[in-house]
Amino acid sequence: MAAIRFVEHQITARVPELGNATNVIDAGLTIRVDPLTGHTARILHQGQLAPSARTDLTDLTTPPPFCPFCADKLEVATGVIAPSITDEGRIRRGASAVVPNVLAYSEFSSVGLYDTTRHFVGLRDLTPQLIGDLFVGLVAYARGVGGLRPMWHSINANYLPPAGSSVVHPHAQTAHDDIGTTAQRNLVAASERWPGNFWHELVEQEAGGPRWLGTRGRVHVLTPWAPIGFHEVWLLIPELHDILELTDDDCADLGAVLSGVLMGYDALDLASFNWALYGGGPSPSSDFGLLLRIVSRANPEPVYRSDVTYFERLHAEAMIDMGPEEVAKKLAPHLAAVLG
Image 1 (cartoon, rainbow, N blue to C red):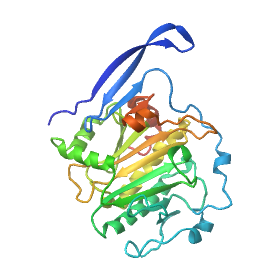
Image 2 (cartoon, rainbow, N blue to C red):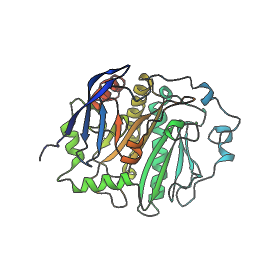
Image 3 (cartoon, rainbow, N blue to C red):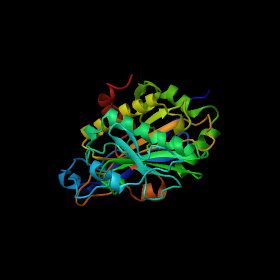
């Protein structure tokens, strides 16, 4: 088995010094190549792109007169899941609830609420129990949909408006159809092209290295060599190939790890995030490993700079200001209690 090659290119640009334009200095830039997909990421050596301070979220997160996801409105404001998927109507696990999505993002879609009893749950209050219960409910919905016919499954989350959320009440969403997403299809296709099993090889090669964070149950945690977003972390289960294969124990482990990551984000003064858990498709390949990616997003401010530029949106290339090794170093203390 050949070792995975982590390729990077070091570039030096000559630019005017910030605040002293008459002085020209050398500015470094690292371009890293993802060994599986060929995706490239640009890591700046100077300057800061990500938010440096979290603003007061009180006005944004104060409960409005009407929120369809709060417990006192949920029963009248949301529908029930079709009996062909589940006979529960609304899937409840602990404080969480799963209801049908009113927006047709895919043929089948649900909304999962971490906690119906509180309108807003901050990063430090998204506990392992809350997130784990949410995963159990969303996997139950996915299994119900999967019982109709084989298809692509994903579980995804936006948190606060900078991450694309139109509702402040924290929630996740599922997507299920015959097409899947570009990222899913590309990951599965690249995994099948790899000579061997990339995901098992990745865990073996990264374990104990500068991007490695640890293992809990079957969940391996690391920061990726070539990130696609700020402060990106991977939660990887190489033994599993689709969301339908997740057990309640796996969901609890994902909840514990994801909660630890969010504690780390909070300590870094971050407030917004996206995560996505990719299923392996209608006929999951044993070459694909179940992968959850989480990235931070810009902090909510009255007027703020988006962290998505032409590089990300039109060139499919991340421009970030902190390398994955540094991200791993900063997050490690917040995951030490949950990872072996």
